[in-house]
Each structure stands twice: as C-alpha cells, then as structure tokens.
Image 1 (cartoon, rainbow, N blue to C red):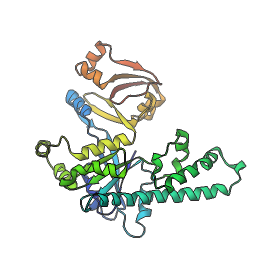
Image 2 (cartoon, rainbow, N blue to C red):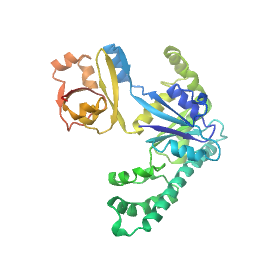
Image 3 (spheres, one colour):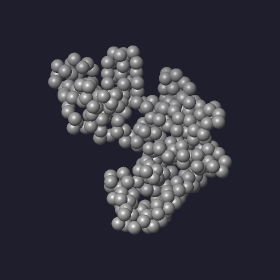
Image 4 (tube, rainbow, N blue to C red):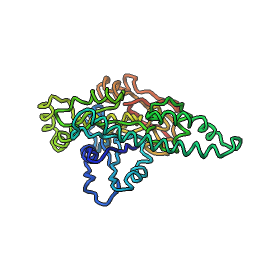
Length: 343
C-alpha cells in the first residue's frame, strides 16, 4: 500500500509531504525520491488508548512517496519510482494561479500527460498482440485483445481508465501494465487562505465527482508546528474543526480500499491495516504469517459494541458480546480482535 505524490513543479508537493509525514524531503539531498509514513487520525483508536493506557501505541499509517524529478529524464524518474504506487495524490497549484480556469488548466496539463502515457502503452500492446497468431495466445492475452480497443477509445477521448467500468478479471489482467490513469486519485487544491472555498467550484469545473480537497499549505504548515492545545486555538480562530491535512490522510487511506481492526491490551493498542473485504485468516497474517497458517478462531467484538459495554473486555464477555468467528468471517472496520491459532 503506497500513495505517490504527483504535481507540477512548485505546486507544494514536498511541503504537503512534510506536513503529513514530518519528513523534510527537500533536505534529503541527492535522492530521487523520499518515502515517509503518515499516522491515520482515528478517534476510535484514541479512545482505546485512553481506556487501556498501553505501554506502546501503534496507529494505522499510510505510506507516501515524494519524487524529486528534474531535467530531461524527470518523467522517467517519476515512472520508475511510482510504478508500484497503489494510488496517486495530485497536488494542484492554486495559490499562484490567476483564477479558476488557470487552476483547472494546471490540473489538466498533468492529467493529459498521464493519459497520453497510458495511451502509448495501449497502442504498443495492441501492436504486439496483432503480430501473434490468435491460436497461440494465452487466456489473459485473449482477454487483452478484447480489452485494449476499449481502453484506447477511453484514452483517446481524454478520459482516465479509472472511469471505465471493468470487471475484477479485467482489472487483474491489467495489473502488470501499471497504468497511471487506472489508479485511484485524490486531488488536493493548494490555495491561498482567501481561496479555501474554491474547491467546490474546481470540482464542478473539472467534472470530478469525488476526492477533491482544498488546502492552504501555508496555514497547514503553521498548524503542524503547534502543540495540540495551540492547534485547537488556531482552528477555532479560523472556524475550522480540523486541519485539512487530517482529511487528506484519511481520504488517502479510504481511497486505497483499506480498513483497520484493533488489538488491545495494557502492553499495546495497535491498529492493523488490511484490505476491505479481507477474511479473518488474512487479517491475522498481517500480525504474523503463522497466525494465518495455524488459524483456529477469531474472538471479535465491534468497536461500538465494546464502548456500549463500558469499554472493558470483561463486561463485553459477561454481556455475551464477544463472539467466535471462523475462517469465512469478513473482518469489519473497527473490529477488536484476538486470534486463536495453533502452529
């Protein structure tokens, strides 16, 4: 799981990366890219920490990658570095742009580059497939023969592949191509304080139906350096409930299709990150592979049920709320789990 940060030069990519991860990537000289992790703000996790007072706390995290690409080979550097990224965070310069159309043009310029790059891959793949006799093509290649013309039409219309309805099988056969426009994308409009309300107009103008967040990089950088108490005073003065970077981290986490479950105790409270829809043995594997191999049962209670039982496992057990689930159980976001296994 990884989010690659993209954007035109001077859009505020590195500043946002620093605000979210605490790593000043611009000071890492000579590196083409810098990786960092941002803790996912979660009120449920904070409440569990307050209940158990553990010796160690481990919140969920989202890995981000900030790319430093300059010169003639800049695009190649971006391609190589972010080839394995699961999603993209596209930072748009809205603070030096003269008006909304200029903001949209800046966003469109990079989007077109990504779409054009994907189009070249599709055209090359179609050309190669046409040179191979159909009777010797593998099942996945036969599916690609049918699929590539649809992809080409979508891209030639200037539309990203993520907007194209695809079956799970079709998406699986496209994984090896690392298409840019197929990956989920979160657009962050970096604006001045006076333009914080322009995100909605930007979203309407671009036709983006979701995943657009406005942010004032200068304000966020100032808030990031404050204590929690000072930060709250700052937010109150701006009539804001939370920093925008909090929403960005949370949105990136959801965009990647991840959820969290918790393990709790006096030694540690930890949020474990798993794909949405994962079954109990796969969820156990993120703790240790042996947990999956020797999985017996999962003792589960939902977060809300746990809180309604007074926030104690003993009370939850007495109330019959702790339940045993087997291998087919699909873990739910916020579950509190203890695994039983035998290796």
